[in-house]
Length: 152
Image (cartoon, rainbow, N blue to C red; front, side):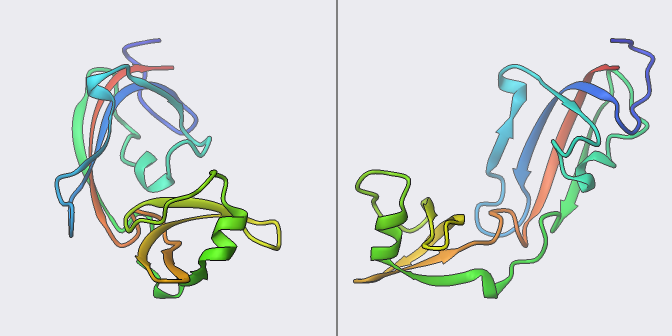
């Protein structure tokens, strides 16, 4: 990899990055941190990162260290994506044996129509579970710290 290459569309990158929640409940919580382990290698334009994140990389080069904020990069929280689902439907479609239903946990299940869904448990009732099918970062602001290690 060249150390003089400027990052542009379709570049291959080796980089360290950290994504931190920058608003609301859990502010300051780190979700991904490659600085503590091995760096990541990605190709821009290959949908490995969302475009809102990729655009902040363009124009940088090897050795650059920078941070940027993303405000609602995963869209606004949509109340229509919070649904009540029967426990029996979740149990029959669960990808786990004997699933436990606890608030804050993510559950993946197959619906009767064959589609696969993942949601975060918000509330557990006697015979129902309230699930939030929004992306976990929907409505949240994120801070991304980056160090470019290689560009091709």
